[in-house]
Amino acid sequence: GQQLNQSPQSMFIQEGEDVSMNCTSSSIFNTWLWYKQDPGEGPVLLIALYKAGELTSNGRLTAQFGITRKDSFLNISASIPSDVGIYFCAPSSGATNKLIFGTGTLLAVQP
Amino acid sequence: DAGITQSPRHKVTETGTPVTLRCHQTENHRYMYWYRQDPGHGLRLIHYSYGVKDTDKGEVSDGYSVSRSKTEDFLLTLESATSSQTSVYFCATTGGNTDTQYFGPGTRLTVL
Image (cartoon, rainbow over all chains, first blue to last red; front, side, top):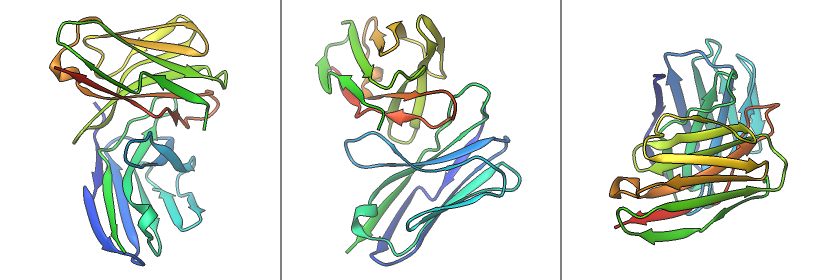
């Protein structure tokens, strides 16, 4: 099956710090999505990337679709306590409308 | 938010009993998905549907069946629940013109 590696597994940071996480794969994808999951809730879409090399921002969040189409990163600038949660990358080959999910990055922000 | 509801939200059952989880959507989305979420595994696809009466298996389909008789409802059935099926189950939908999936609030199932 397709291998998807998401790192780091967890991060414990101070409020105001910047955060970076990434996903890499041996497979090529056409779409990279980033989701956030708050405790007890379903994942919510943060950013969608549809083109290799694409850099997209959503407020304090910035994500990039790697030029090789095998990786993506998500940066959060000036973290705040409500950024706490689990962040998932979810790429798709596009042919079947199916997503593959990374194992998640748990983010904890100390006020 | 794609108007997705899941029922029940919590269920405790015993090994060997049948269980059915329901996903309901109000967006007329064509595609619907069932995932399970377990620590260390992220979200894994159980089954999905690409239209009424059209379903297919995901990566962890053993022990599960699905049915979709109407666009808005996608049912997940555990014919005979086992303790290994204790998990949080999420339903998701997409209209199909993009890969973006929208998730329901989840069902926490405990099999004793």
